[in-house]
Length: 136
Ligand code: CMP
Image 1 (tube, rainbow, N blue to C red):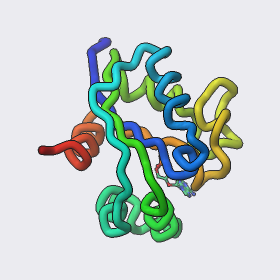
Image 2: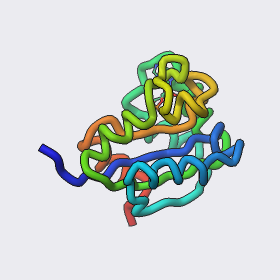
Image 3: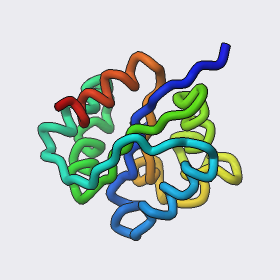
């Protein structure tokens, strides 16, 4: 069944550093996503550690958190029918080398770490991740 969902998107430091945030936002809008909320911020490493807590046992956890907090990011709440899956399809595979043509990571990603964008992986996690950045 199709339903309108919200998902969290992050334009990561590698993409913001290359001034790709507006270009990436246009891609989302052209694919029918509505950007409900957005802000450009830089987070502390401890905040990145909380955000990526699900990965805390992974060997790449420390580098991942250091990286996400290394420069400005753009965080957005995106809305569309089936937004979670639609965003994951548009982002492409985690490793840009494996991402299909036409996906954001294929086009802009540099490596598995510097893969330009993050997107929530489920409706449940989307709610948690949106609250993490936008709870007021
Ligand atoms: P993201 O969707 O932000 O979620 C976790 C991130 O960990 C992922 O994108 C990658 O950038 C990063 N990462 C680094 N190494 C790996 C790995 N071996 N497997 C999965 N994700 C990795």
